[in-house]
Image (cartoon, rainbow, N blue to C red; front, side, top):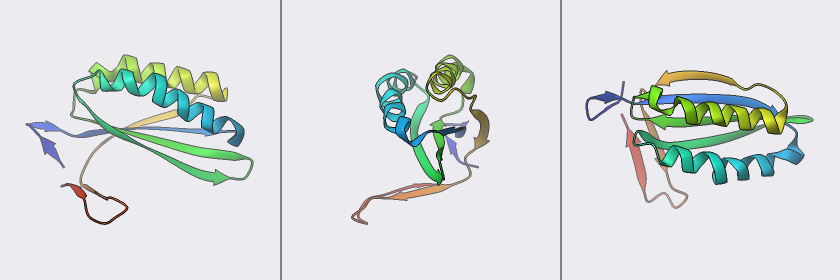
Length: 116
């Protein structure tokens, strides 16, 4: 389990399905409306959005990372859930995880961020 400044790193997962024609508008809304709310919270540490092709729909998984204190992010997270519902017409699923470890290497293979 990864600890940062005596707090356990948390990951909140939000999963939903969306029409491919709505995906760009949905991600624009995330960047323009949701991300600024998260950036205003002191415990927000970043996010990753993933897409998988499921025929006529796309499966989207958004992982947001938090330095514990998820209760402080609940209002912003629920606003994100509401925005997803407005765009997709479906309720996304949510789960919370504790981060065990991770690594990200840039496209050039030069810079690496490790979490362990």
